[in-house]
Length: 115
Image (cartoon, rainbow, N blue to C red; front, side, top):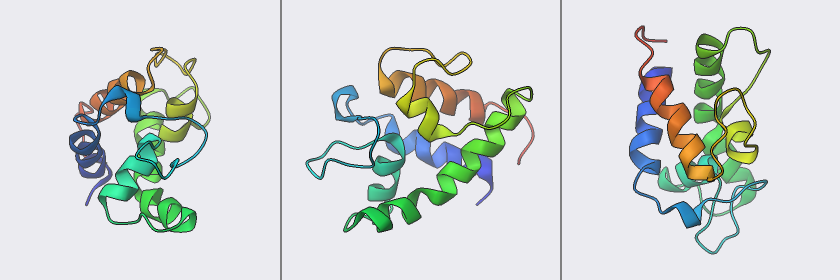
């Protein structure tokens, strides 16, 4: 899959998840709440241990870095985890975690070229 396809896949996975099921600062609470990367990893079948969750989300994290570079070339490095955890990242300032994550993913999949 290309980075753009991974980001579209993430958007498809994350959009239906209720806002209240997103958390910051950890992959999962093991009670149904996860960060964006955690939800993606769980959907991909990596749900049995924190290390599996991290490995399951690696492709999405790397794709988000590449998209952010294209969207905001003057910022050194940012990824979906930072957008999930902080509401002060270059235009992704929505108070709800899900809202800023979805905002970024929609911006990323709207990039014209494949990457």
